[in-house]
Image (tube, rainbow, N blue to C red; front, side, top):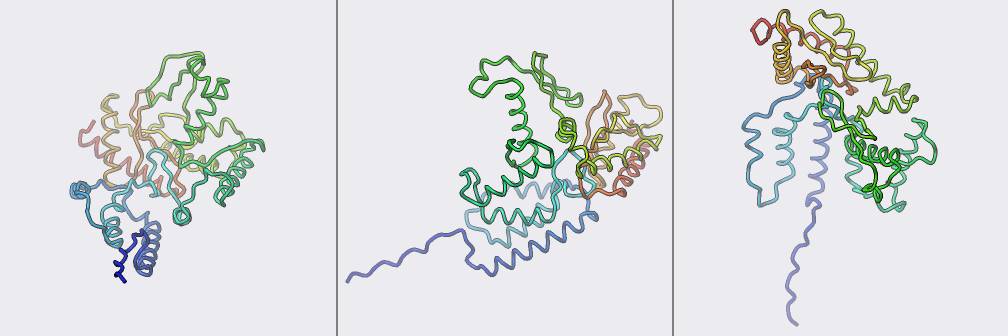
Length: 332
Protein backbone atom coordinates (compact mmCIF):
# COMPACT_ATOMS: atom_id res chain seq x y z
CA UNK A 1 0.00 0.00 0.00
CA UNK A 2 1.34 3.35 -0.98
CA UNK A 3 2.18 5.68 1.86
CA UNK A 4 -0.13 8.64 2.31
CA UNK A 5 1.60 12.00 2.44
CA UNK A 6 1.07 13.82 5.76
CA UNK A 7 -1.59 16.49 5.61
CA UNK A 8 -0.43 20.06 5.84
CA UNK A 9 -1.60 21.85 8.99
CA UNK A 10 -4.82 23.76 8.44
CA UNK A 11 -4.73 27.52 8.81
CA UNK A 12 -6.91 29.36 11.33
CA UNK A 13 -7.10 32.84 12.80
CA UNK A 14 -7.95 31.47 16.24
CA UNK A 15 -5.15 31.54 18.85
CA UNK A 16 -2.86 28.54 19.17
CA UNK A 17 -2.72 29.06 22.92
CA UNK A 18 -6.18 29.92 24.24
CA UNK A 19 -5.00 30.29 27.84
CA UNK A 20 -2.28 32.79 26.90
CA UNK A 21 -4.84 34.80 24.94
CA UNK A 22 -7.21 34.68 27.91
CA UNK A 23 -4.50 36.12 30.17
CA UNK A 24 -3.72 38.86 27.64
CA UNK A 25 -7.42 39.72 27.46
CA UNK A 26 -7.65 40.02 31.23
CA UNK A 27 -4.62 42.29 31.22
CA UNK A 28 -6.18 44.49 28.55
CA UNK A 29 -9.36 44.88 30.60
CA UNK A 30 -7.38 45.76 33.73
CA UNK A 31 -5.19 48.25 31.87
CA UNK A 32 -8.10 50.01 30.17
CA UNK A 33 -10.09 50.30 33.40
CA UNK A 34 -7.02 51.80 35.08
CA UNK A 35 -6.61 54.20 32.15
CA UNK A 36 -10.21 55.41 32.25
CA UNK A 37 -10.15 55.68 36.03
CA UNK A 38 -7.13 58.01 35.98
CA UNK A 39 -7.98 60.17 32.96
CA UNK A 40 -8.29 63.31 35.05
CA UNK A 41 -4.65 62.97 36.13
CA UNK A 42 -3.38 62.81 32.55
CA UNK A 43 -2.85 65.47 29.88
CA UNK A 44 -5.88 65.98 27.69
CA UNK A 45 -3.80 65.58 24.55
CA UNK A 46 -0.17 65.01 23.60
CA UNK A 47 1.28 65.73 20.19
CA UNK A 48 2.94 62.53 18.85
CA UNK A 49 6.71 63.19 18.75
CA UNK A 50 8.84 62.57 15.71
CA UNK A 51 9.96 59.08 16.73
CA UNK A 52 6.34 57.98 17.13
CA UNK A 53 5.41 59.34 13.72
CA UNK A 54 8.49 57.69 12.20
CA UNK A 55 7.56 54.35 13.72
CA UNK A 56 4.39 54.22 11.66
CA UNK A 57 6.37 54.63 8.45
CA UNK A 58 8.06 51.25 8.95
CA UNK A 59 7.71 48.67 6.16
CA UNK A 60 5.00 46.03 6.36
CA UNK A 61 6.05 42.98 8.42
CA UNK A 62 6.21 39.77 6.43
CA UNK A 63 5.72 37.46 9.41
CA UNK A 64 2.95 37.32 12.02
CA UNK A 65 3.59 39.39 15.14
CA UNK A 66 2.89 38.01 18.65
CA UNK A 67 -0.35 39.37 20.10
CA UNK A 68 1.46 40.49 23.26
CA UNK A 69 3.98 42.49 21.23
CA UNK A 70 1.20 44.19 19.26
CA UNK A 71 -0.50 45.16 22.52
CA UNK A 72 2.76 46.59 23.90
CA UNK A 73 3.04 48.67 20.75
CA UNK A 74 -0.47 49.99 21.41
CA UNK A 75 0.39 50.90 25.00
CA UNK A 76 3.59 52.71 24.08
CA UNK A 77 2.78 54.36 20.76
CA UNK A 78 -1.00 54.68 20.41
CA UNK A 79 -2.70 55.11 23.77
CA UNK A 80 -0.62 58.06 25.04
CA UNK A 81 -1.24 60.03 21.82
CA UNK A 82 -4.95 59.50 21.30
CA UNK A 83 -7.24 62.37 20.35
CA UNK A 84 -8.18 62.82 24.01
CA UNK A 85 -11.96 62.89 23.60
CA UNK A 86 -12.48 60.58 26.60
CA UNK A 87 -10.82 63.14 28.90
CA UNK A 88 -13.07 65.30 31.13
CA UNK A 89 -11.57 68.49 29.74
CA UNK A 90 -11.91 67.68 26.04
CA UNK A 91 -14.43 70.06 24.42
CA UNK A 92 -13.14 70.27 20.84
CA UNK A 93 -15.75 69.30 18.26
CA UNK A 94 -18.34 66.69 19.28
CA UNK A 95 -16.85 63.18 19.32
CA UNK A 96 -18.28 60.68 21.76
CA UNK A 97 -16.53 60.23 25.10
CA UNK A 98 -17.46 56.59 25.64
CA UNK A 99 -18.31 54.70 28.80
CA UNK A 100 -16.81 51.71 30.55
CA UNK A 101 -19.73 49.47 29.73
CA UNK A 102 -19.75 50.57 26.08
CA UNK A 103 -16.16 49.31 25.85
CA UNK A 104 -17.33 45.95 27.18
CA UNK A 105 -20.23 45.83 24.75
CA UNK A 106 -17.83 46.46 21.86
CA UNK A 107 -16.16 43.20 22.87
CA UNK A 108 -19.53 41.42 22.85
CA UNK A 109 -20.51 42.86 19.47
CA UNK A 110 -17.15 42.02 17.89
CA UNK A 111 -17.32 38.48 19.26
CA UNK A 112 -20.58 37.59 17.52
CA UNK A 113 -19.66 39.90 14.58
CA UNK A 114 -23.20 39.80 13.26
CA UNK A 115 -24.77 41.41 10.18
CA UNK A 116 -28.31 42.72 10.66
CA UNK A 117 -29.04 43.24 6.99
CA UNK A 118 -30.63 39.84 6.50
CA UNK A 119 -33.90 40.47 8.33
CA UNK A 120 -35.38 38.84 11.40
CA UNK A 121 -33.27 35.69 11.34
CA UNK A 122 -30.97 36.57 14.24
CA UNK A 123 -31.16 38.14 17.71
CA UNK A 124 -29.26 41.33 16.78
CA UNK A 125 -32.13 42.36 14.51
CA UNK A 126 -34.52 42.35 17.46
CA UNK A 127 -32.07 44.34 19.60
CA UNK A 128 -31.86 47.08 16.97
CA UNK A 129 -35.63 47.19 16.54
CA UNK A 130 -36.14 47.40 20.30
CA UNK A 131 -33.70 50.31 20.69
CA UNK A 132 -35.36 52.19 17.82
CA UNK A 133 -38.77 51.65 19.44
CA UNK A 134 -37.46 52.97 22.75
CA UNK A 135 -36.15 56.10 20.99
CA UNK A 136 -39.55 56.60 19.39
CA UNK A 137 -41.20 56.43 22.82
CA UNK A 138 -38.76 58.93 24.34
CA UNK A 139 -39.26 61.42 21.50
CA UNK A 140 -43.00 60.91 21.12
CA UNK A 141 -42.75 59.64 17.55
CA UNK A 142 -45.72 57.76 16.07
CA UNK A 143 -45.75 53.99 16.37
CA UNK A 144 -45.43 53.52 12.60
CA UNK A 145 -42.20 55.58 12.48
CA UNK A 146 -39.06 53.68 11.51
CA UNK A 147 -35.35 54.13 12.03
CA UNK A 148 -31.93 52.54 11.96
CA UNK A 149 -28.88 52.53 14.22
CA UNK A 150 -25.79 54.08 12.65
CA UNK A 151 -22.11 54.19 13.54
CA UNK A 152 -22.23 57.84 14.63
CA UNK A 153 -23.62 61.33 14.25
CA UNK A 154 -22.10 62.02 10.83
CA UNK A 155 -23.74 59.07 9.13
CA UNK A 156 -27.03 59.59 10.98
CA UNK A 157 -27.06 63.27 9.99
CA UNK A 158 -26.59 62.34 6.34
CA UNK A 159 -29.42 59.82 6.54
CA UNK A 160 -31.65 62.34 8.32
CA UNK A 161 -30.94 65.09 5.81
CA UNK A 162 -31.66 62.74 2.92
CA UNK A 163 -34.98 61.70 4.44
CA UNK A 164 -35.92 65.32 5.22
CA UNK A 165 -35.00 66.44 1.71
CA UNK A 166 -37.05 63.73 0.02
CA UNK A 167 -40.00 64.28 2.35
CA UNK A 168 -40.13 68.06 2.07
CA UNK A 169 -39.35 68.10 -1.63
CA UNK A 170 -41.98 65.45 -2.32
CA UNK A 171 -39.53 63.45 -4.40
CA UNK A 172 -37.71 60.13 -4.37
CA UNK A 173 -34.30 59.04 -5.60
CA UNK A 174 -35.82 57.93 -8.91
CA UNK A 175 -37.50 61.28 -9.52
CA UNK A 176 -34.72 63.49 -8.19
CA UNK A 177 -33.33 64.46 -11.59
CA UNK A 178 -36.57 66.20 -12.51
CA UNK A 179 -37.04 67.88 -9.10
CA UNK A 180 -36.40 71.62 -8.64
CA UNK A 181 -32.84 72.43 -7.54
CA UNK A 182 -32.25 72.68 -3.79
CA UNK A 183 -29.76 74.99 -2.13
CA UNK A 184 -28.18 74.72 1.29
CA UNK A 185 -26.05 76.84 3.54
CA UNK A 186 -24.22 76.47 6.82
CA UNK A 187 -23.82 78.72 9.83
CA UNK A 188 -21.61 81.82 9.81
CA UNK A 189 -18.50 80.24 11.41
CA UNK A 190 -18.21 77.84 8.50
CA UNK A 191 -18.51 80.70 6.01
CA UNK A 192 -19.72 78.46 3.23
CA UNK A 193 -22.90 79.18 1.33
CA UNK A 194 -24.55 78.34 -1.95
CA UNK A 195 -26.79 80.59 -3.98
CA UNK A 196 -30.38 80.95 -2.73
CA UNK A 197 -33.05 78.86 -4.37
CA UNK A 198 -36.71 78.00 -3.93
CA UNK A 199 -35.84 75.26 -1.46
CA UNK A 200 -33.24 75.76 1.23
CA UNK A 201 -31.76 73.35 3.73
CA UNK A 202 -29.81 74.58 6.68
CA UNK A 203 -27.33 72.45 8.67
CA UNK A 204 -27.82 72.79 12.40
CA UNK A 205 -26.29 71.21 15.43
CA UNK A 206 -27.99 67.83 15.82
CA UNK A 207 -29.04 68.37 19.42
CA UNK A 208 -30.35 71.87 18.67
CA UNK A 209 -32.36 70.51 15.76
CA UNK A 210 -33.78 67.76 17.93
CA UNK A 211 -34.74 70.28 20.59
CA UNK A 212 -36.42 72.57 18.06
CA UNK A 213 -38.32 69.89 16.17
CA UNK A 214 -39.29 67.78 19.18
CA UNK A 215 -40.24 69.83 22.27
CA UNK A 216 -40.33 66.70 24.42
CA UNK A 217 -36.60 66.26 23.90
CA UNK A 218 -36.00 69.56 25.70
CA UNK A 219 -36.95 67.95 29.01
CA UNK A 220 -34.97 64.74 28.48
CA UNK A 221 -32.12 63.91 30.91
CA UNK A 222 -29.34 64.38 28.37
CA UNK A 223 -30.69 67.77 27.22
CA UNK A 224 -30.87 68.93 30.83
CA UNK A 225 -27.30 67.84 31.41
CA UNK A 226 -26.11 69.68 28.31
CA UNK A 227 -27.85 72.89 29.35
CA UNK A 228 -26.70 72.88 33.00
CA UNK A 229 -22.99 72.50 32.29
CA UNK A 230 -22.75 75.27 29.68
CA UNK A 231 -24.57 77.58 32.10
CA UNK A 232 -21.77 77.03 34.62
CA UNK A 233 -19.11 78.04 32.12
CA UNK A 234 -21.24 80.94 30.86
CA UNK A 235 -21.44 82.30 34.38
CA UNK A 236 -17.69 82.05 34.89
CA UNK A 237 -17.01 83.82 31.59
CA UNK A 238 -19.59 86.54 32.22
CA UNK A 239 -18.12 87.27 35.64
CA UNK A 240 -14.64 87.93 34.27
CA UNK A 241 -13.99 91.40 32.77
CA UNK A 242 -11.09 89.95 30.75
CA UNK A 243 -13.31 87.48 28.91
CA UNK A 244 -16.00 88.18 26.33
CA UNK A 245 -18.96 85.93 25.60
CA UNK A 246 -19.19 86.30 21.83
CA UNK A 247 -22.45 84.47 21.10
CA UNK A 248 -25.62 83.58 23.04
CA UNK A 249 -25.55 80.13 24.63
CA UNK A 250 -28.65 78.31 23.44
CA UNK A 251 -27.64 74.72 24.13
CA UNK A 252 -24.22 73.14 24.64
CA UNK A 253 -21.67 75.43 22.91
CA UNK A 254 -19.97 78.36 24.65
CA UNK A 255 -18.01 80.80 22.47
CA UNK A 256 -15.74 83.30 24.20
CA UNK A 257 -12.38 85.01 23.85
CA UNK A 258 -9.71 86.68 25.95
CA UNK A 259 -9.74 90.47 25.91
CA UNK A 260 -6.35 92.13 26.32
CA UNK A 261 -6.42 95.88 26.98
CA UNK A 262 -5.42 98.05 24.05
CA UNK A 263 -4.91 95.92 20.93
CA UNK A 264 -7.08 96.12 17.85
CA UNK A 265 -9.22 93.26 16.50
CA UNK A 266 -6.52 91.63 14.31
CA UNK A 267 -4.16 91.61 17.28
CA UNK A 268 -6.83 90.12 19.53
CA UNK A 269 -7.44 87.41 16.94
CA UNK A 270 -3.72 86.59 16.87
CA UNK A 271 -3.57 86.46 20.66
CA UNK A 272 -6.54 84.10 20.93
CA UNK A 273 -5.16 81.84 18.20
CA UNK A 274 -1.91 81.50 20.14
CA UNK A 275 -3.86 81.09 23.38
CA UNK A 276 -5.70 78.10 21.91
CA UNK A 277 -2.40 76.50 20.89
CA UNK A 278 -0.96 76.99 24.37
CA UNK A 279 -4.01 75.49 26.08
CA UNK A 280 -3.98 72.45 23.83
CA UNK A 281 -0.25 71.74 23.62
CA UNK A 282 0.21 72.03 27.38
CA UNK A 283 -2.42 69.31 27.76
CA UNK A 284 -4.49 71.48 30.08
CA UNK A 285 -7.79 71.68 28.21
CA UNK A 286 -8.91 71.10 24.64
CA UNK A 287 -11.40 73.54 23.20
CA UNK A 288 -11.36 74.24 19.47
CA UNK A 289 -11.18 77.54 17.63
CA UNK A 290 -13.57 79.24 15.26
CA UNK A 291 -14.60 82.63 13.93
CA UNK A 292 -17.89 84.16 15.03
CA UNK A 293 -19.02 87.56 13.75
CA UNK A 294 -15.51 88.29 12.56
CA UNK A 295 -13.87 87.46 15.91
CA UNK A 296 -11.59 84.50 16.55
CA UNK A 297 -12.88 82.67 19.61
CA UNK A 298 -12.44 79.64 21.83
CA UNK A 299 -15.21 77.19 20.95
CA UNK A 300 -16.21 74.93 23.86
CA UNK A 301 -18.61 72.14 22.80
CA UNK A 302 -19.81 70.52 26.03
CA UNK A 303 -21.00 66.96 25.44
CA UNK A 304 -18.62 65.23 27.83
CA UNK A 305 -20.36 63.33 30.62
CA UNK A 306 -17.14 63.36 32.67
CA UNK A 307 -16.82 67.16 32.87
CA UNK A 308 -17.28 68.72 36.32
CA UNK A 309 -17.49 72.23 37.70
CA UNK A 310 -13.79 72.10 38.59
CA UNK A 311 -12.91 71.47 34.93
CA UNK A 312 -14.64 74.64 33.77
CA UNK A 313 -13.03 76.59 36.58
CA UNK A 314 -9.63 75.32 35.43
CA UNK A 315 -10.44 76.31 31.83
CA UNK A 316 -11.23 79.90 32.84
CA UNK A 317 -8.32 80.11 35.25
CA UNK A 318 -5.76 78.89 32.69
CA UNK A 319 -7.28 81.04 29.94
CA UNK A 320 -6.78 84.12 32.11
CA UNK A 321 -3.28 83.12 33.18
CA UNK A 322 -2.01 82.31 29.71
CA UNK A 323 -3.87 85.22 28.14
CA UNK A 324 -2.19 87.66 30.51
CA UNK A 325 1.20 86.08 29.87
CA UNK A 326 0.77 86.33 26.10
CA UNK A 327 -0.41 89.94 26.34
CA UNK A 328 2.57 90.87 28.55
CA UNK A 329 4.93 89.12 26.12
CA UNK A 330 3.58 91.18 23.24
CA UNK A 331 1.83 88.35 21.38
CA UNK A 332 -0.87 90.83 20.44
